[in-house]
Image (cartoon, rainbow, N blue to C red; front, side):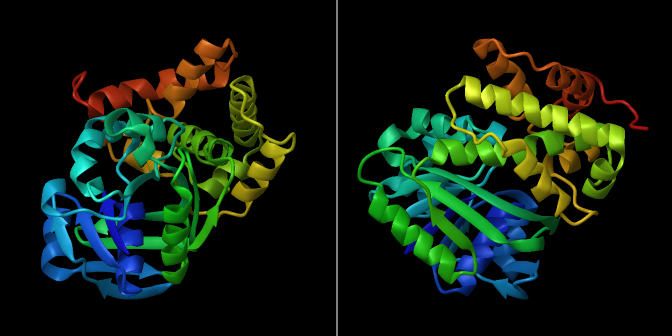
Length: 315
């Protein structure tokens, strides 16, 4: 199976390395110093699954140069999806499907708008990984947990084949009947954690052990769960309790991807996570005061990172 990875950051880089090590033909869409290092030295992975260097079949910043793939795993930041989507068409020319692995609940729709609904499945991944240096990816915690699901007829066999390849590479991979619900269940975990952590500038262990901050985290989860149900998503009644229990099991030093981006002064997924909750809540008529406050508090840093206001010293 030929798999293209669009975006070789923590998630995409880890998957590319694991898949290539397992013998899959992997093409990587990446750019800049990271892409050059992968092209020159291979993709260096440090993971509980092994420390190794893997080589991709092709690395380019031009999708047309990579050739068609059976599956395109889209692992760029959520705010990059809409612009990237039409450019991925050459990768799907042979009848492949695109699977989004963004934090958020809007990526599949954005891909479908640029590629057509028939070529886009649903997907999500749970993993802690990041770029340590150009060409090097660090993974901590458990194995990557992937869920995929059909969003259009004719995708089932392709997703079964993809899941089998991912399992062979060391991932947990599951086909789910309701991928929309699965996406919101992941969002319930990653978005409140990222939002509160970015504002508090604290790792998971501190967030959950300080009573006032833990209470804020719970309120953010409750707001998000209410929004999901208002949009017709069948979240179970104990969704918040189960999600909090998962966060309680995360290594105490863990940080969220949005927290790391905000802390480093980089553009983040603020609009696609906290901003999306605020935006979708207004459409649904659901009150989300915690999210509105967190969004307003983090917006000056995001605006500075994107050059919308002058940069300022971070204290």
